[in-house]
Each structure stands twice: as C-alpha cells, then as structure tokens.
Length: 102
Image (cartoon, rainbow, N blue to C red; front, side, top):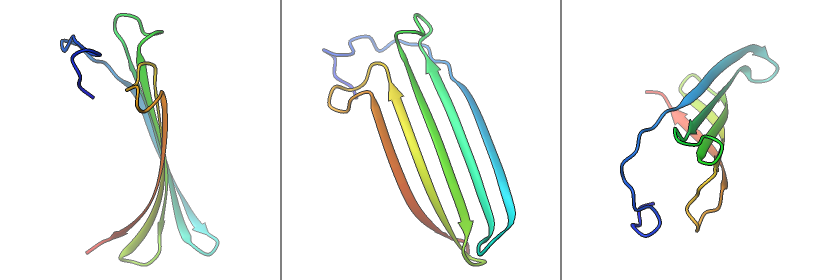
C-alpha cells in the first residue's frame, strides 16, 4: 500500500525473525501419509519494536491422494500493528489446493 500522505518516508531498514517446522506422519489410517508444516515470521521495527511490527503465521496439511495428486490445506494469519486502513490489523486466509505431479 503506497500513498504519500499516509507513508511519506520510503527510506527504511528491515529485519525478520522466523521459525519453520515440518513433520510427516506415516501409516495414518485411510490416508497413509500426512505432512504438517508451519512457519512463523516476525518483522519488528528497528526503532521501536513494541509499536511497529508485523507477524505472519502459516500452518499447512498435505495429503497425497494418489501417486500424482496431492491435496493441501493452508491457514494463513497476518497481524499488523500499523495496517492499511481499509484492511484492519488482522487478516486470516484459508486455502484448499490440489497439486498434480507430472
């Protein structure tokens, strides 16, 4: 979101802290394999990290349906201390995706 009257200063430095993880469950009843993965990323302000920050979290489940077809469910959560006024400070999104391996 760029609008000069809200964000007049375009000079900045950024930093990020994050953690990723993945675990695969084998021999799950009916589906054989289930992969659970997650990620959390925190972008603090370098001037005042208590006032200006954004965080993103993502959790996903992946299930291979056939040798060539995979189903994935994603949950994404974004929290912003200084958001675009039209969005608000929290945003959640869920996705159901199918992947074809060829």
